[in-house]
Length: 263
Ligand SMILES: [Zn+2]
Image (tube, rainbow, N blue to C red; front, side, top):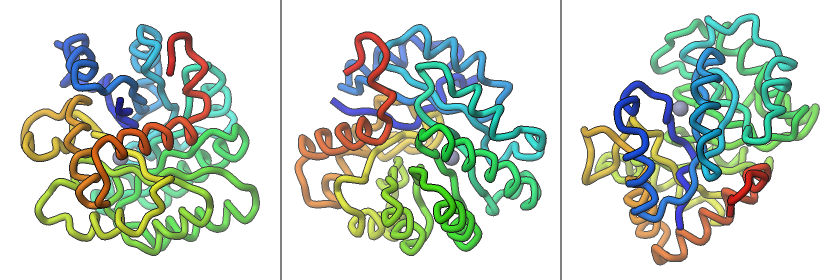
């Protein structure tokens, strides 16, 4: 059994064959998934998908790319959206200075609201961070000193210092298909430095298909290739990776046990 901890099932690329995609995942042993919010306006579509499957949970939040569309989003709005039982995390949210689709000040403001919601609800904060290590460290560190929360670094490609700081906060880290890419030795080096009880896996589908599917549409079934590679990188068996990452996922996302039929 494997859990794909970060899927974007409401993406238009899955509109035509979502049932098939979910069947493929089950056939590959991927028995549970967390489908992620990119914008608050996507909430209804995401909720509809989650409501049809006991093994698909969801998050609430706004991606940093869309921060400028969410300047009015307050922590209390996120807290109220998170009241549904199938919501297990806040995000994805964070800072992305690689693309910079939203101005930095907007990203910072909207991310701060998400941090506050994670502090208040106790739900994990699902963090997207790219080329923003210094400000990310500062924002997480200052907020954590005020009130604890549990950070998750998703699809991690940033530096070791930020990853280690998040581990010190009791946080988690997730690796995607990028770990299979030939040029991703720095990502594999970070993975080797992380405690085994804090690592989970994801596809971030439909993006970032792992080798050998690179360049094609990614789907949750492909998380097996992430797990396979992670096992090689850490020097443990595939069975041990499945056991570890599944246990880590359910320890992190404690609400993911609420729905009927859930593991
Ligand atoms: Zn992301």
